[in-house]
Length: 334
Ligand code: ATP
Ligand code: MG
Image (tube, rainbow, N blue to C red; front, top):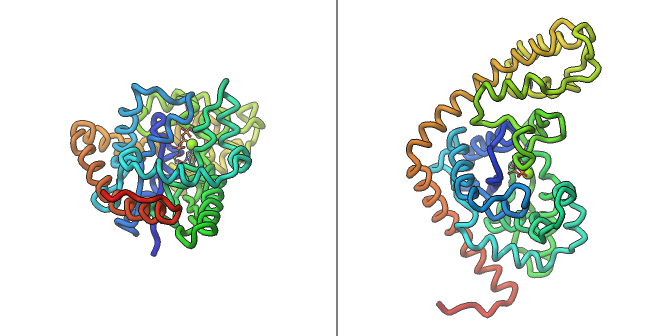
Protein backbone atom coordinates (compact mmCIF):
# COMPACT_ATOMS: atom_id res chain seq x y z
CA UNK A 1 0.00 0.00 0.00
CA UNK A 2 1.28 3.44 -0.92
CA UNK A 3 0.87 6.20 1.62
CA UNK A 4 1.86 9.75 0.76
CA UNK A 5 2.91 12.42 3.24
CA UNK A 6 4.24 15.94 2.75
CA UNK A 7 4.46 19.15 4.74
CA UNK A 8 4.85 22.82 3.98
CA UNK A 9 6.03 25.47 6.43
CA UNK A 10 4.00 28.57 7.25
CA UNK A 11 7.13 30.74 7.08
CA UNK A 12 5.79 33.32 4.65
CA UNK A 13 3.97 33.85 1.38
CA UNK A 14 3.67 30.66 -0.69
CA UNK A 15 5.56 31.08 -3.97
CA UNK A 16 5.77 29.53 -7.42
CA UNK A 17 8.63 27.28 -6.23
CA UNK A 18 6.33 25.76 -3.61
CA UNK A 19 3.57 25.51 -6.19
CA UNK A 20 5.45 23.79 -8.99
CA UNK A 21 7.88 21.92 -6.73
CA UNK A 22 5.39 20.56 -4.24
CA UNK A 23 1.77 21.78 -4.06
CA UNK A 24 0.83 20.73 -7.60
CA UNK A 25 2.07 17.24 -6.84
CA UNK A 26 -0.02 17.16 -3.66
CA UNK A 27 -3.11 17.67 -5.78
CA UNK A 28 -2.08 15.04 -8.34
CA UNK A 29 -1.17 12.38 -5.78
CA UNK A 30 -4.30 13.25 -3.77
CA UNK A 31 -6.43 12.39 -6.79
CA UNK A 32 -4.61 9.07 -7.03
CA UNK A 33 -4.36 8.04 -3.37
CA UNK A 34 -7.30 9.76 -1.65
CA UNK A 35 -7.25 9.27 2.11
CA UNK A 36 -3.81 7.68 1.80
CA UNK A 37 -2.45 11.11 0.90
CA UNK A 38 -1.71 13.23 3.98
CA UNK A 39 -0.68 16.89 3.77
CA UNK A 40 0.19 19.06 6.64
CA UNK A 41 0.97 22.70 7.39
CA UNK A 42 4.06 22.16 9.53
CA UNK A 43 3.77 24.95 12.06
CA UNK A 44 6.05 23.22 14.57
CA UNK A 45 8.86 23.54 12.02
CA UNK A 46 8.35 27.23 11.30
CA UNK A 47 9.82 28.61 14.57
CA UNK A 48 13.07 26.64 14.10
CA UNK A 49 14.35 29.48 11.92
CA UNK A 50 14.27 32.65 14.04
CA UNK A 51 14.96 34.72 10.90
CA UNK A 52 11.50 33.79 9.58
CA UNK A 53 9.50 33.50 12.80
CA UNK A 54 7.22 36.03 14.46
CA UNK A 55 4.77 34.60 17.02
CA UNK A 56 2.09 37.15 16.19
CA UNK A 57 2.15 36.12 12.52
CA UNK A 58 2.30 32.34 12.83
CA UNK A 59 -1.43 31.59 13.17
CA UNK A 60 -2.29 33.87 10.24
CA UNK A 61 0.44 32.39 8.07
CA UNK A 62 -0.74 28.89 8.95
CA UNK A 63 -4.25 29.82 7.85
CA UNK A 64 -2.94 31.47 4.66
CA UNK A 65 -0.85 28.44 3.76
CA UNK A 66 -3.87 26.19 4.23
CA UNK A 67 -5.94 28.52 2.07
CA UNK A 68 -3.25 28.54 -0.64
CA UNK A 69 -3.32 24.76 -0.89
CA UNK A 70 -7.09 24.77 -1.26
CA UNK A 71 -6.85 27.59 -3.82
CA UNK A 72 -4.55 25.52 -6.06
CA UNK A 73 -7.04 22.67 -6.05
CA UNK A 74 -6.35 20.42 -3.06
CA UNK A 75 -9.63 18.79 -2.01
CA UNK A 76 -9.78 18.42 1.79
CA UNK A 77 -12.63 15.92 1.48
CA UNK A 78 -10.54 13.72 -0.77
CA UNK A 79 -7.21 13.78 1.12
CA UNK A 80 -6.21 14.22 4.77
CA UNK A 81 -5.24 17.88 5.20
CA UNK A 82 -4.39 19.28 8.62
CA UNK A 83 -2.16 21.39 10.86
CA UNK A 84 0.84 19.64 12.41
CA UNK A 85 0.50 21.10 15.93
CA UNK A 86 -3.07 19.76 16.15
CA UNK A 87 -1.58 16.27 16.35
CA UNK A 88 0.57 16.08 19.51
CA UNK A 89 2.16 12.81 18.41
CA UNK A 90 4.47 14.62 15.95
CA UNK A 91 6.38 16.13 18.86
CA UNK A 92 6.39 12.92 20.84
CA UNK A 93 7.71 10.73 18.03
CA UNK A 94 10.26 13.39 17.16
CA UNK A 95 11.70 13.16 20.67
CA UNK A 96 11.96 9.38 20.50
CA UNK A 97 13.74 9.56 17.14
CA UNK A 98 16.03 12.30 18.45
CA UNK A 99 17.32 9.85 21.07
CA UNK A 100 18.94 7.69 18.39
CA UNK A 101 20.07 10.30 15.86
CA UNK A 102 23.78 11.20 15.84
CA UNK A 103 24.42 14.95 16.11
CA UNK A 104 27.13 14.60 13.45
CA UNK A 105 24.57 13.48 10.87
CA UNK A 106 22.41 16.52 11.60
CA UNK A 107 25.35 18.92 11.40
CA UNK A 108 26.07 17.70 7.87
CA UNK A 109 22.68 18.85 6.53
CA UNK A 110 23.26 21.64 4.02
CA UNK A 111 19.95 23.42 4.78
CA UNK A 112 20.98 23.55 8.44
CA UNK A 113 24.40 24.97 7.51
CA UNK A 114 22.87 27.56 5.16
CA UNK A 115 20.28 28.77 7.67
CA UNK A 116 22.57 28.59 10.75
CA UNK A 117 25.33 30.61 9.12
CA UNK A 118 23.01 33.61 8.87
CA UNK A 119 22.15 33.50 12.60
CA UNK A 120 24.08 34.86 15.55
CA UNK A 121 22.94 32.06 17.82
CA UNK A 122 21.63 28.74 16.48
CA UNK A 123 18.66 27.17 18.27
CA UNK A 124 18.90 23.40 18.83
CA UNK A 125 15.50 23.19 17.09
CA UNK A 126 17.09 24.18 13.77
CA UNK A 127 19.51 21.27 14.10
CA UNK A 128 16.63 18.92 15.03
CA UNK A 129 14.44 20.04 12.11
CA UNK A 130 15.12 16.93 9.98
CA UNK A 131 14.29 14.63 12.93
CA UNK A 132 10.89 16.29 13.31
CA UNK A 133 10.46 15.93 9.56
CA UNK A 134 11.26 12.21 9.80
CA UNK A 135 8.70 11.93 12.63
CA UNK A 136 6.07 13.68 10.46
CA UNK A 137 6.49 11.06 7.75
CA UNK A 138 6.97 7.97 9.91
CA UNK A 139 4.04 8.76 12.24
CA UNK A 140 1.78 7.82 9.32
CA UNK A 141 4.06 5.03 8.07
CA UNK A 142 4.21 6.96 4.80
CA UNK A 143 6.51 5.66 2.06
CA UNK A 144 6.13 8.38 -0.60
CA UNK A 145 7.07 12.01 -0.04
CA UNK A 146 6.41 14.63 -2.75
CA UNK A 147 9.00 17.41 -2.25
CA UNK A 148 11.34 19.73 -4.10
CA UNK A 149 14.92 18.65 -4.72
CA UNK A 150 16.13 20.76 -1.77
CA UNK A 151 14.67 18.11 0.56
CA UNK A 152 16.65 15.16 -0.86
CA UNK A 153 19.17 15.11 1.97
CA UNK A 154 16.44 15.28 4.62
CA UNK A 155 14.58 12.34 3.07
CA UNK A 156 17.80 10.33 2.97
CA UNK A 157 18.20 11.02 6.68
CA UNK A 158 14.57 10.02 7.34
CA UNK A 159 15.34 6.68 5.67
CA UNK A 160 18.38 6.27 7.88
CA UNK A 161 16.30 7.12 10.98
CA UNK A 162 13.63 4.56 10.00
CA UNK A 163 16.31 1.91 9.40
CA UNK A 164 17.92 2.61 12.75
CA UNK A 165 14.61 2.39 14.60
CA UNK A 166 13.67 -0.85 12.84
CA UNK A 167 17.06 -2.33 13.64
CA UNK A 168 16.78 -1.52 17.37
CA UNK A 169 13.09 -2.22 17.97
CA UNK A 170 12.04 -4.56 15.15
CA UNK A 171 10.35 -3.80 11.81
CA UNK A 172 8.07 -0.80 12.31
CA UNK A 173 8.48 1.87 9.64
CA UNK A 174 8.81 1.79 5.84
CA UNK A 175 11.81 3.64 4.40
CA UNK A 176 10.26 6.69 2.74
CA UNK A 177 11.16 7.79 -0.81
CA UNK A 178 11.08 11.28 -2.28
CA UNK A 179 9.10 11.94 -5.48
CA UNK A 180 9.77 15.08 -7.50
CA UNK A 181 7.85 17.21 -9.94
CA UNK A 182 9.38 17.23 -13.43
CA UNK A 183 10.95 20.54 -14.52
CA UNK A 184 10.45 21.99 -11.03
CA UNK A 185 13.17 20.34 -9.00
CA UNK A 186 14.67 23.56 -7.68
CA UNK A 187 13.18 26.80 -8.91
CA UNK A 188 15.62 29.72 -8.74
CA UNK A 189 14.78 32.92 -6.87
CA UNK A 190 13.92 35.94 -9.03
CA UNK A 191 16.86 37.82 -7.43
CA UNK A 192 19.29 35.28 -8.91
CA UNK A 193 20.61 34.38 -5.44
CA UNK A 194 19.99 30.63 -5.31
CA UNK A 195 16.70 28.82 -4.75
CA UNK A 196 13.44 30.68 -4.25
CA UNK A 197 12.61 30.55 -0.52
CA UNK A 198 9.90 32.02 1.69
CA UNK A 199 12.37 32.69 4.49
CA UNK A 200 14.71 34.71 2.24
CA UNK A 201 11.95 37.27 1.90
CA UNK A 202 10.04 38.81 -0.92
CA UNK A 203 13.02 39.81 -3.04
CA UNK A 204 13.55 36.12 -3.90
CA UNK A 205 9.94 35.06 -4.45
CA UNK A 206 7.13 35.38 -6.93
CA UNK A 207 4.13 34.87 -4.66
CA UNK A 208 1.04 32.89 -5.60
CA UNK A 209 -1.11 35.78 -4.37
CA UNK A 210 1.20 38.59 -5.45
CA UNK A 211 -0.24 41.26 -7.75
CA UNK A 212 0.81 41.03 -11.40
CA UNK A 213 2.26 44.56 -11.16
CA UNK A 214 4.49 43.57 -8.29
CA UNK A 215 5.57 40.40 -10.10
CA UNK A 216 6.42 42.41 -13.21
CA UNK A 217 8.46 44.90 -11.17
CA UNK A 218 10.65 42.06 -9.89
CA UNK A 219 10.83 40.27 -13.21
CA UNK A 220 11.74 43.41 -15.16
CA UNK A 221 15.00 43.78 -13.21
CA UNK A 222 15.70 40.06 -12.76
CA UNK A 223 19.18 38.98 -13.92
CA UNK A 224 19.38 37.05 -17.21
CA UNK A 225 22.26 35.23 -18.93
CA UNK A 226 25.26 37.51 -18.16
CA UNK A 227 26.68 36.77 -21.63
CA UNK A 228 23.94 39.00 -23.11
CA UNK A 229 25.44 42.38 -22.45
CA UNK A 230 23.91 44.04 -25.52
CA UNK A 231 20.56 43.34 -27.16
CA UNK A 232 22.44 41.92 -30.16
CA UNK A 233 24.45 39.38 -28.13
CA UNK A 234 23.15 35.81 -28.34
CA UNK A 235 22.30 34.18 -25.01
CA UNK A 236 21.79 30.75 -23.51
CA UNK A 237 18.22 30.32 -22.16
CA UNK A 238 19.36 27.30 -20.15
CA UNK A 239 21.52 29.68 -18.09
CA UNK A 240 18.73 32.16 -17.46
CA UNK A 241 16.08 32.08 -14.76
CA UNK A 242 13.57 33.60 -17.18
CA UNK A 243 14.23 30.55 -19.39
CA UNK A 244 13.56 28.31 -16.38
CA UNK A 245 10.31 30.12 -15.61
CA UNK A 246 9.11 29.84 -19.23
CA UNK A 247 9.29 26.05 -18.86
CA UNK A 248 6.83 26.33 -15.96
CA UNK A 249 4.39 28.86 -17.35
CA UNK A 250 4.50 28.99 -21.15
CA UNK A 251 3.06 26.76 -23.86
CA UNK A 252 5.40 24.68 -26.04
CA UNK A 253 5.24 27.08 -28.99
CA UNK A 254 6.21 30.09 -26.85
CA UNK A 255 9.06 28.14 -25.23
CA UNK A 256 10.37 27.17 -28.67
CA UNK A 257 10.19 30.77 -29.92
CA UNK A 258 11.80 32.46 -26.92
CA UNK A 259 14.53 29.82 -26.58
CA UNK A 260 15.36 30.15 -30.26
CA UNK A 261 15.05 33.95 -30.06
CA UNK A 262 17.49 34.10 -27.14
CA UNK A 263 20.09 31.91 -28.89
CA UNK A 264 19.94 33.98 -32.10
CA UNK A 265 19.50 37.38 -30.39
CA UNK A 266 16.12 37.56 -32.15
CA UNK A 267 14.32 38.58 -28.98
CA UNK A 268 15.42 41.01 -26.27
CA UNK A 269 15.26 40.10 -22.58
CA UNK A 270 12.44 42.55 -21.83
CA UNK A 271 10.25 41.12 -24.62
CA UNK A 272 11.07 37.63 -23.43
CA UNK A 273 9.96 38.62 -19.92
CA UNK A 274 6.75 40.18 -21.28
CA UNK A 275 5.89 36.92 -22.99
CA UNK A 276 6.49 35.13 -19.71
CA UNK A 277 3.97 37.43 -18.02
CA UNK A 278 1.25 36.05 -20.30
CA UNK A 279 1.74 32.56 -18.88
CA UNK A 280 2.09 33.85 -15.34
CA UNK A 281 -1.21 35.69 -15.63
CA UNK A 282 -2.93 32.63 -17.10
CA UNK A 283 -1.72 30.47 -14.19
CA UNK A 284 -2.05 32.82 -11.23
CA UNK A 285 -5.31 34.69 -11.91
CA UNK A 286 -7.59 31.64 -11.31
CA UNK A 287 -5.61 30.73 -8.17
CA UNK A 288 -5.93 34.29 -6.89
CA UNK A 289 -9.66 34.34 -7.62
CA UNK A 290 -10.21 31.07 -5.78
CA UNK A 291 -8.09 32.43 -2.90
CA UNK A 292 -10.32 35.51 -2.65
CA UNK A 293 -13.43 33.31 -2.52
CA UNK A 294 -11.94 31.19 0.26
CA UNK A 295 -10.81 34.25 2.20
CA UNK A 296 -14.45 35.36 2.29
CA UNK A 297 -15.39 32.01 3.94
CA UNK A 298 -12.67 31.52 6.57
CA UNK A 299 -14.82 29.11 8.59
CA UNK A 300 -14.82 26.67 5.69
CA UNK A 301 -11.02 26.56 5.76
CA UNK A 302 -10.97 26.07 9.54
CA UNK A 303 -13.62 23.33 9.35
CA UNK A 304 -11.63 21.52 6.68
CA UNK A 305 -8.54 21.54 8.92
CA UNK A 306 -10.51 20.22 11.93
CA UNK A 307 -11.93 17.44 9.81
CA UNK A 308 -8.44 16.59 8.55
CA UNK A 309 -6.94 16.55 12.06
CA UNK A 310 -9.58 14.06 13.26
CA UNK A 311 -8.63 11.73 10.41
CA UNK A 312 -4.89 12.15 10.93
CA UNK A 313 -5.30 11.37 14.63
CA UNK A 314 -6.92 8.05 13.80
CA UNK A 315 -3.75 6.95 12.02
CA UNK A 316 -1.25 8.60 14.37
CA UNK A 317 -2.57 7.35 17.72
CA UNK A 318 -2.21 3.58 17.13
CA UNK A 319 1.23 4.05 15.54
CA UNK A 320 2.35 6.03 18.57
CA UNK A 321 0.96 3.34 20.92
CA UNK A 322 3.00 0.77 19.01
CA UNK A 323 6.13 2.92 19.28
CA UNK A 324 5.68 3.55 23.02
CA UNK A 325 5.33 -0.17 23.62
CA UNK A 326 8.41 -1.02 21.56
CA UNK A 327 10.55 1.61 23.24
CA UNK A 328 9.51 0.22 26.63
CA UNK A 329 7.35 2.87 28.28
CA UNK A 330 5.09 1.55 31.05
CA UNK A 331 1.97 2.88 29.36
CA UNK A 332 -0.92 4.68 30.94
CA UNK A 333 -4.08 2.82 32.05
CA UNK A 334 -6.38 5.72 31.09
P1 ATP B 1 11.74 28.24 3.93
O1 ATP B 1 12.60 29.29 3.28
O2 ATP B 1 11.05 28.70 5.17
O3 ATP B 1 12.47 26.93 4.12
P2 ATP B 1 10.61 27.27 1.47
O4 ATP B 1 10.21 28.27 0.44
O5 ATP B 1 11.90 26.53 1.28
O6 ATP B 1 10.54 27.98 2.89
P3 ATP B 1 9.28 24.95 2.57
O7 ATP B 1 8.03 25.11 3.38
O8 ATP B 1 10.57 24.70 3.27
O9 ATP B 1 9.40 26.21 1.59
O10 ATP B 1 9.05 23.78 1.54
C1 ATP B 1 7.76 23.36 1.09
C2 ATP B 1 7.92 22.52 -0.16
O11 ATP B 1 8.27 23.35 -1.27
C3 ATP B 1 9.03 21.48 -0.04
O12 ATP B 1 8.58 20.28 -0.63
C4 ATP B 1 10.17 22.07 -0.80
O13 ATP B 1 11.02 21.07 -1.33
C5 ATP B 1 9.43 22.83 -1.91
N1 ATP B 1 10.22 23.95 -2.41
C6 ATP B 1 10.61 25.04 -1.68
N2 ATP B 1 11.32 25.89 -2.44
C7 ATP B 1 11.39 25.33 -3.69
C8 ATP B 1 11.98 25.72 -4.94
N3 ATP B 1 12.64 26.87 -5.04
N4 ATP B 1 11.85 24.89 -6.01
C9 ATP B 1 11.17 23.72 -5.91
N5 ATP B 1 10.59 23.29 -4.77
C10 ATP B 1 10.68 24.07 -3.67
MG1 MG C 1 12.56 25.23 2.87
